[in-house]
Length: 251
Image (cartoon, rainbow, N blue to C red; front, side, top):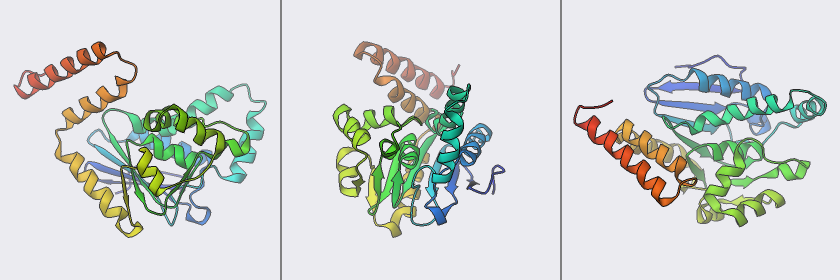
């Protein structure tokens, strides 16, 4: 069932605890626009509370080739002198940021090109299930720009400082074998098996107790900023909440 109105650049579907976001501009390899980001932002805000897994995919042969050229020209020209530039970018970031919330596990089903904003959308998800024809590239450098949709932090977390910096300052393309080797891809399968692999991973996530999954994701989200002592304290607190809940003594 359709979950929210949209501009037609994306489709939002619900199937019980699984929501699917499909970018619907296959004729331009699902290139992104501010209108698409507004749709994603609204969907994130209106997502039903019983959704546990969000799958993000692209219609056609590509996940997303990045920012639409025409949209980029208009957007960048307007922002050069806009007094609210920071607020505009913050709104764009919100379109991806909701995928990181602890109550959800987000899965990017990536095939073909995942370039620039497309790469950052895949990075916003917890997992990346990739077809073996995938090509990742942080191509903002080609336009004299920087990644600004949350991609730098997640890329650093996944592949480390030196590799993340190299990918961002060169914009080079990363194919499936390297993506798997350096931790960008959780799973790599033939394109024909992509939907089944995503369904299998989603089903495995749903087998776990929802509150435990939420606690685990929250623990990992804060781990990098914690000392071992702080993280151990967070683990103790999370575990006690689970034990009390299982004993019927939840807060």
